[in-house]
Amino acid sequence: HVDNYRYTVTEVMHQQRLDHCLHELIPAYSRSYFQKNIQQGYVSINQTVIVKPGYRVKVGDLIECLIPRIDFAQSAAAIDATLLEGVD
Image 1 (cartoon, rainbow, N blue to C red):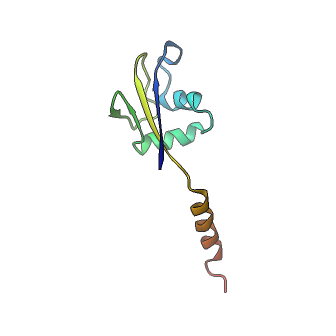
Image 2 (image 1 turned 180 degrees about the horizontal axis):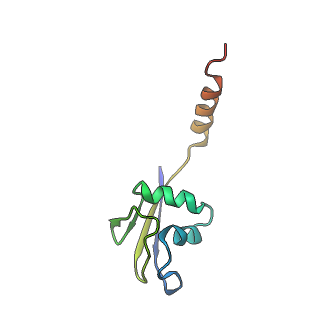
């Protein structure tokens, strides 16, 4: 599952780096998190995938960002399995 966020760039955000802009809009995630998401192709501007975190946004740009949901139960099970590897 993924969450889809859509924002239109305002004058306040004009010429900001894309990763910085996303972090300001969705502060629950770090800028480095957005850098990775951008590089992995999860962010588009005006329906064009952008892979450069330093892309400068412009007034009126439509930013779409997909944020994969973390399945904490599945993640915990994977961590437990890793910790148990090699344990007799």
